[in-house]
Length: 394
Image (tube, rainbow, N blue to C red; front, side, top):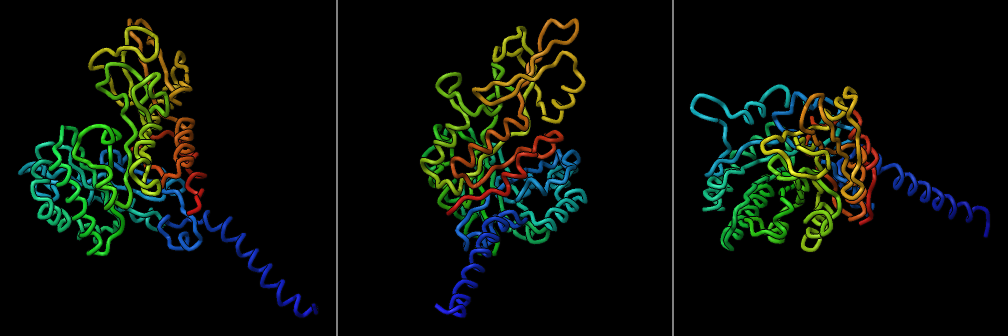
């Protein structure tokens, strides 16, 4: 083989190898949306990191979230019983979710994150059982009403995706389930007709084993992604103290856990549609005894953000962080001077977040969603910077 032929063969080959290395090692680290078609062409799937931005935390979520997120979701606008979006709380006052939606604080945030390459999503919400019953009485008309209101707002303010969060926790009939699935189907069709992006639907883990309006398999046919809200396993109304999002321990120390929710979801929903909801907060209870996981004094609970815990640990001389290895959850138990009761705080931090990210990646999930921006402390989100850059082969 002559030098000329060798050169003709080797140069393209070496160039191809170098190009492949550059593509597979550096492209996934670029600040591109997980929806970028380049990833599909390369046969890889980027992790999605969704940050929920509730209107009541807008003034507290003041960090630069670009290194940690791929998507920012505004929570959110309320859906009325006829599908139209709620703008008035009463005849004299605007609904606060609408006031913040069109305000300068959110507008400035959206411009910044869009410039930084993040995808923005508008969330529509209802948790009123009476309203939900009315909404689903006519799935087509009310879906049209909702989308007639939502689509122009998405266009005006630059939202690409739509998140549907309808939370009902009462016994549902087979007809109720069918109507909810029809409603989701209609919303998806209207998004497509209007040239919008993905439809995301939020699930409580309990929909996999309780008879609520959400039929997970039916809804997943039409949703591009489903967020499993894997938190509030213990909450403000719990009789016992305990972790808000225990990673494991089902069947031993508790009835269910985050890993069980993932397992249930993967049985009926493609893993590349599942997004794991992760809390950035915990709860604080008062108890009469010091032992962890015991009965709480009624009406003593409050939300404990990671931000508050960080400040507490730096200022409280009698507060020590402990860690429940089974649930992968940190907690603090302490007693104030001269008090005859104890404070028990179960919360989330960098270590517990990292453990959940590892489980999400191990299970091949589409990504994670954070509830909610503004609750985190100074360094809690740091594990997300690497998670955001990782990818899975299709």
